[in-house]
Each structure stands twice: as C-alpha cells, then as structure tokens.
Amino acid sequence: MKIKFHIPNFTQHYHVNLLLVKMIKEYPHFFHDGLEIASVYGEFPPSIWNGGRTTMGVCTNPKDIKHILRTFNNLGIPCRFTFTNPVLEHKHLNDKHCNTCMSLGNNGLNEVIVVSPMLEKYIRNNYPKYKITSSTCKEIKDFNLLQEELEKDYNLVVLDYNWNNNFEMLERLNHKDKCEILVNACCQANCPRRGEHYRFIGSQQIEYVNHMNRYPNTPFEFKAFECPHTAHTIFDIKDSPVHITPKDILEKYVPMGFENFKIEGRSFHLFNLIETYMYYMAKPEYRDEARFTLLLSLQQNNVITTHTIFD
Image (cartoon, rainbow, N blue to C red):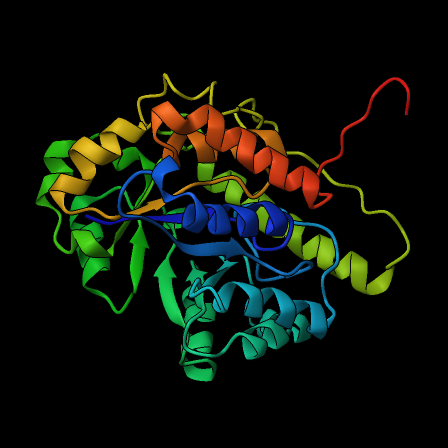
C-alpha cells in the first residue's frame, strides 16, 4: 500500500517541507505506513505562467533555483511547477524567467502542471523530459470527459474536488493510479465562481510580473478576490461535503486503487500548514509528538523563533 502526498510550495515553504521529509525518514513510526512525499509543487516567483494562487516575491537567482531543485531532487522528490495560468497569450511563452526555470529543472525527474493547451504544447516541444500533470483548474465535471482526460498522455490528472466522496463514480474510473485527489479543498462545493477566480488570479499574476519588470522597487497593489473561503483552516473545512479525512484515505480511497493525494496550501500560514500535515500524515496516537518534533526542528533551524517578555 502506498500513500503518495503532493505538498505545497518548494519556495515559501522550503524549510518546513524539507524538515518534514527528513522527519518522515527519521521517525517513520510517527506516520502512516506506506506514506511518501511524491512531489513538492510551486514556482519560483515572479512566474508569469503561474496559476491557482497569485504568488509574489522574487526568486530569480539561478544559484538559488538550482539549490532548491537539487535539494529536493537529491532526496528523490520532483519539484512540480504550477504553470496553470488560464489567461496566457502566445507572447508569454517567451518569458525569460519561466524558460530559465524549465531549463534548470529539465532533468527527467521534475514535473509541470498545466491548464493551457498552448503552454502544454510549448513545454512538450521544448522541454520533453518533464512529466506533465493535468490540473484540477480545468474543472472537468463531466464523467466521460474525465475518462478521456485519463486516457491522454499525462503522468497524473488532478480531479476536480467535486468528485470527492462520489464513490459510485470514482469506482468506475479507469486508471485510478493516474488520478490525484485534492483532499483539503478550501473552496465550497460546486463553487459558481471558481473559474472566474482562476482567471482573476491569472490576470493578476501577469500584472504583477509586468509591474516587477518595470518598477522593481515600487510596491504592487495586490487585489484580493472577494471570497470568504480563502482564509479557511483545516478546522474550518472538516464539515465540507468535499472534505476527505485521513480515515477515508486509508479505508476507502487506497483500497479502491487511488494512491496520489494533493494537499493544497501554497498560501497557508505556517501553523495551518503544519496542522494540515499532521492531520493527514501522522498516526493519531503520534500526532502531538510529531507536531512538537517538527516545531522544535523549525525553531532549531531558525525558521520560527521563540520570544519572552524579557527579550
């Protein structure tokens, strides 16, 4: 039995993810049997091809990019680029930074998630070593279309979260080994504005990159999409009809043949991310000790600090 988790953010969450991977190897008894980190997804900002979340910041030094890629790759873990911007134009294919990132990671291990057929074709032609994942951002809600997507040349297909807990239909799917299931979706079920939200994010990502290219020393005016669900924590979503519990994974999904599970959280606060990791990965009886061990490791590595009134 394998439980493969795909976790967020090889840049902003670099330290916590690296320590988590090392902790799984050092303290395997804390975690569910067969558990592994199958990829860490994200991007090196500012990436105009990025989608799903507007990502700001700057990580463009090739030495830093190579260091992050090499660190995870040396552990056998792919870095998976979230190049899912749905509003790209042909001119954006020539973006220097995104092409540099693809060139530096073009080693046969790393991966890329896609939405745009135009960008997918470009990557297949220019960077053929990458394994390609079909994004949940495509919002494939028709069963026959989903079956067709699974027949295509994708390494994995991330299912629309509205399929979660629809076991009658999930059981009928072919290629369950190619399905990746988003377990902790923060969005409401059947959100009517989800596609609009992705397009908003994609457009803002382009605006941010253009702003940084022209005015690198001037703050960018970030605009938040009006949605009450974006700030939800792991505790807020447990009653959602599309939520998947750790027990569901172990007792329902894995026995059905599913083994790939995505944890969203590129923009999560550190503590929400840690709690989400512990919820899904740690055995209940070891959850507190595992959380404490990870927090202590983060403090020892100066990722978080402790303060007292006497500091």
